[in-house]
Amino acid sequence: MDCKDQEGFTLIEVLVGILLLAIVSIGFYMVLFATSRSADTSRAVTKVSEEARLGFGRIVRDTRQGRRIVAASDTSYTVEVDFDGDGAIDPDGIQNSQGDYEVLTFSFNEAAETISLNGEILMRRVQCVEASGVCKPVFNYASNRLEYDWTPKDGIAT
Image (cartoon, rainbow, N blue to C red; front, side):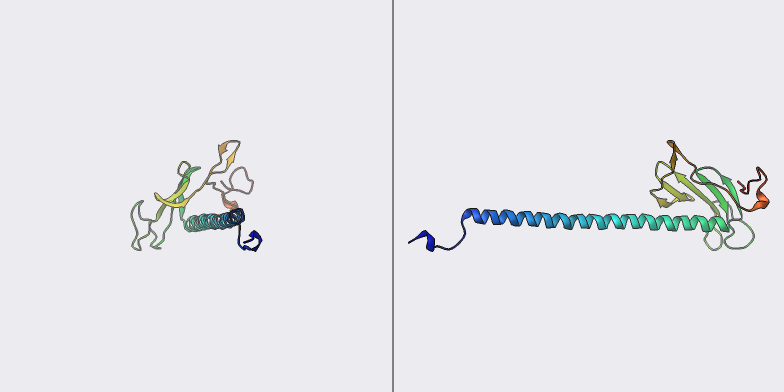
């Protein structure tokens, strides 16, 4: 019996084939897992962006409806809003007849990276803008209504 008449693969050819299959499989799975991680990251960024959009929308809406700002600092402010339209502001911590709080306190916690509304977290992963290593004020108060521009008569009331 001649060796030339035998058909099949040698052990080396089988091992080379398995090695090539392994390399292609590993490359395929790396691409698959990278795509999965990318999709997870995109979902997380979208969730944070949506939370921020809704949170800032709530802050702007409630502040615009506010009757007056009671207290204000760089990291928090309190506004009174007559949600039920009865002409009276229910005290802090008391709900009106519709179940709404009419004294709203928005505050920024730099350590926790959150903005909260009356102690409940409204937005997460909030960071202050730094200038020269110093955190700039999170809340800034200004108006372009000229009747409140007493000094320095620059067109902005603060």
